[in-house]
Image (cartoon, rainbow, N blue to C red; front, side):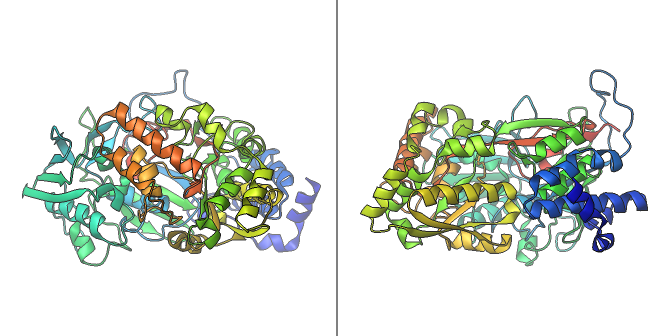
Length: 590
């Protein structure tokens, strides 16, 4: 603590204004604002210099929570305050990176969906809320009011809403969103070489639009996941005219619950309510309830927590790993916060590039697998709360995953076996670079350092390769790495978690893995409409993926800690990235 205060007094710090991206936008008193900003900078600096304990003492030791706390209204009465919806207000949240581009065709990543999830929509949507749960895929209407599936599971007919109007801004000029837009989007996702959602629609044979409000999708055969995909944000529908005008990459103009108002890189992006949005609640009230939401760009996790504790944001978007030491800081500094820890449906991955020559050898991949000790990761990084996982579909999926006893056998933590496999492959003391990006969070750095240690003990010569986020994304798409540690996205159907990531040539196969023995199993499971039989086919594919260490390893799943202020009502975490969809029925009780 003394070191922290000494650094705080150094003259050069007097000129620093930390979190300017927040303080430029939120009115605070000058003296308190400068003090709090400097204090957060100290904590951030300490973290970056590896002085975690001292940094946390600055954040959690009372200085921040006392000096920087925002005055709070009196607590609500027992029972959680008013149950009557209050329309209006701006929801504020922090996010770690700027949106890079805005056209979902290229890659529907989370930073993009903070914008596009508000301006666009899908044919269907999932029911959200605590009752439904974090991974709910229960479908309800959205752009389509009704839908039906042919008895053979090969034809899907959607009846669209009338009066879904685009924003009155060029080139859309208040036009109606119709079946021609849906047809255009589905064909574009299927045929465009940049499409990362191709796996969701590649079975589409043809699309008929007999009138502006009817879409008939004809598949090559039964395709079990399609309805679930129709409700997923990876198939956001962008107005055709916007794409054809060449504007969809940098502008988000549409018909969704929110409209893009303004944005400044490294500062804040603002979304405002669409007054012409087509949905209403069961009482006939206009949705969304909010007047809008603001996304503050705060790259550092410690600074994100500091902003929440100081009352500058209401809710997390890039939330904390359940193992993060900052979680204790959060609990001490914001005692009224609602905090929910949920088991990750995805899980962090260790991609093994098969563009990298050694990665093509099954013995090398199995040696990496044998070197890994998941229990050590779980004990050190998640305080024992994480669960063993496997590549593809982990325990959060229930009986879609393999039994727990079977999962455990794939990570035996056997360095001697790893050394022997490397020797058999003629790759003793194999140099391995592990690519990671600080944008994924400091937890990945700690994970990477432990992975380096485990690989070294098993006969590898590993090192961490720190890469800026945009560069890492480009290299990942080209599989230009040896190993790459990165967060695992959740996809709403098992197919998206195995076919999309392991099928030869698939759009999300970032390892460029290709195993001819696996592909028939992946194709089989997506054509089976009987759930029980489909689960058996999925299990067969999972066994081969993990026995042959194809594509990537996924040794454990941690929890994520979601947090928000008690006055944020009508909200519960969901796998959706886009806040536009997650906040349709969110309101502020203040």
